[in-house]
Length: 199
Image (cartoon, rainbow, N blue to C red; front, top):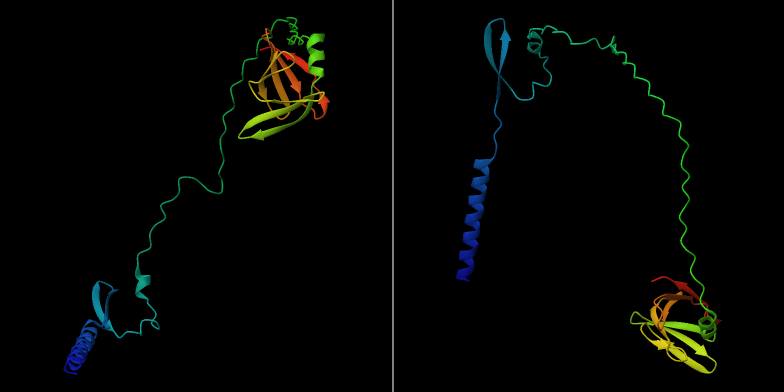
């Protein structure tokens, strides 16, 4: 109980100190002093606050008028003097020369796949493809046989064809002993139709 009384007394003392501090630090209203010019004499007047609102200040009109110094140009008669452009010399006429006709360069037509290769590839039918782990696998059938072909695999009767690249729309192969590529457009349930491409 004695401890509680001490705490209460200390809190009460803090409250009194806070009240005294607030009273001392409270802003006080001061009187305003200003100077007014009446001829050459300077008078200092002290006025009560609140009377400045209703009073007409004539001393502000006693400033000397400033003379107009003029402007560099007239805003209402602004005329731009334009210089006449110098005449350009006439270009000399070019001599008449017949234009050269340049024939467009056409790429050579791809050579036809020979009949034996065409017949060997026509025996295969494209059934579909599978994409797993970014590896394309093409399903080809030849009669009752089923071939799963990936990039780098060999297929055919004597493994004479090697798959170079495979995409969902096209397969590029190479025949053993030939440096040219054979492009095959993959159409589902259709026979393989080859066409040559230069390497």
